[in-house]
Image 1 (cartoon, helix red, strand yellow):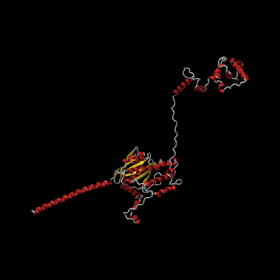
Image 2: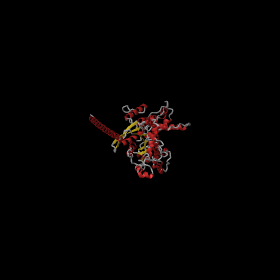
Image 3: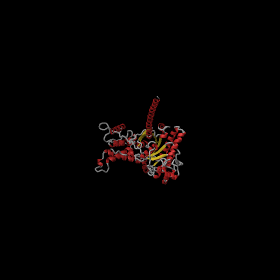
Image 4: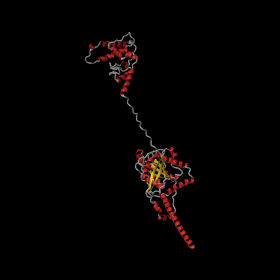
Length: 495
């Protein structure tokens, strides 16, 4: 009995050991699966990163982001726009989307930032401030204005003091830890550390400059000067020199020092620094490797990474300023050009229809009693041309002049009708007699061949005798007669 019991106990103990071994194997499989999942998740790119783009209208925000996306047909919106940039890590075979929020250039839309930048997203946000070289006189004011907008918004988030200090410390440390590409290998080498007598786990951070990070927003900031291809136009049309462009650059770089920002000069039109901007973004946001040093040689393709610049490097630009002092007020040197008044073209007049015009003129002539009816009773005759009718309307004679010296009276007299002395108006005959006399001279056409005394008509002889008698009377008269006006004495040349 004892042996049987011992055998059963041994059998049960062996079965229990096998069961425990199988349980341990199952736990090991699940642990390995969970470890692989965790490691796979850690290699994926984060999906909560974003960029907030601020800048005035016409600074090229939409076009620049479309260039980073690879989109050749950008569509501009309004208010707060959303886009994304596809980011791919070839080394880890991972892909993610970098969210991009673009705020409208109107500062009145600043309240929309609450939908793009909340308290939980501050740590995952990079800022991009855009200004355009097409308006260099507004560059500095625009940068300060948008920096104030984002500062006011961050203040409105009511972040804790510890969170703000943590974010600012991180930005400051990244600035101090910057190294030129290639220098990080030398700094990490044992020979380098041994020569400096530094332990391997000790980091040496240089102190910040006097004007560096004085306005720390707690976020990565990138200043982008767009449309740098317009510099050629500034030089030709606005007489900008290299010293003016250096003056602008040194002021912008001082702004970047204050906010710990990187600086890019870009041109989508000429494709300058656009790819470099994309590489720098994914480097700062996702930690991708970046091997491009600062670029300050080409004036329209400047690149200054965050942490590289300082006051001493900026002072190199002063050497090219001969007629400008670096401390001059910005708008005193880079002033807004005078607005040229555009020539306003005269409004185009629509010509009136010819028949309508002539019909209206006909009605005016008939209403004035000047135009004589034509053959059909409607319209002026062929002799009454517009110039003759206008001349007739321009010289209107009073009733006294018509009686005393009107050419029509002279014509009536020369045609054989004598003035009756007994009728009213016959007493004033001196001007009429003289008019008849001069008209008779015109009718005679003195000096023409074939004319003699025998051909003179009785009316002409009568006019001459009347004129002679009148002249004799005027000579004997003691009173000086009133001079005859030239307009009254002028003969009617139409007779």
